[in-house]
Image: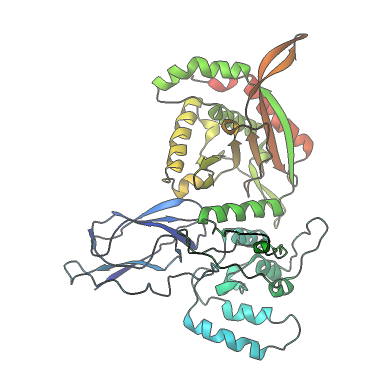
Length: 469
């Protein structure tokens, strides 16, 4: 009897993934645990192994397609069964996503759609309510983005009790806020419209476009703020519409969520790393003999971990619904890594308890896995504080956005030789620009200055960091 393999639950509340590559062919006989598919989630690019050994009878997905947890990916024939059936003309409609990026709905739900307006009065904002009733899924994972799920947790809302007003029954931020009786904070003094008014706003029709190898474009998940319609740029000249990749869309949603929910404040500082740079230069060969490439980032991680011991409220997350600060007694530091697909933040665990060489060794291995697309979900979750070092790319400074739900992030720019007054004279010193961005709900400016000064002091006294070097 043929066996169907469906997209498994990937954890972390993830409900969908984008197919990156299909690693087998129809009719091919493969072994158990053989590479089957590569998928990209909101967290990472993951290789899915085959759960059984057998012949691939039918592949139901194509690269660039977004599928939900539980969707059929591959059908396996019986061992020794008949030859694989010839490919069908079209993929099953339950898997192919609509261009809007919404979860596919069952045929009865589509049939019920046109009948809804007849039972609704012509005037008033009430059409938003029936839309939620017809679109709500009956069972299975609630279709909602990770950002919406986090908002629901913050507001104490059970997503299973919320009727989604988005395409295909997707639960939007406005649905969660309506269920909690909450309103999104205003932006620049302009109040946001209620969900019903927002859903009724006219939207410009996108211009015709050619098919993209990245798949159909999908809208970003909102965070409650309704942007004004874009002008028709085509009236001024030729344009090209390029669908966002799954990872780029996730980055955009997370950055919007952080910038919308968190009141950011940034403290600027500089560290004199002349002595630290000399230590790195002197010990490069000795470290290589022990299998480690010594870098400034390893020292930054060590310094941040020690500073977080002295200032634990920066190693925390805020639970506004409970009115509590969740202080983490572990120190898992994220490091922003630039990849061709976008910015990814892998996590080094228990940095505060590790010597410098171990930190450097783990950092190099982790960054390599991320750049090669082999990072696991475990590599990318559980961070408590993030460091982003753009010094290799230049620049004199940058203001990073907090990696929500963390409460602070350290930005590092390129170190430069500068004239510095020391002992009454002017001498050249290697100065490193630092920017600490933090959640103003959690800490005040004085707190941020003390924490940044702690990091600067450690970098300027590198003997406190080297340990076994």
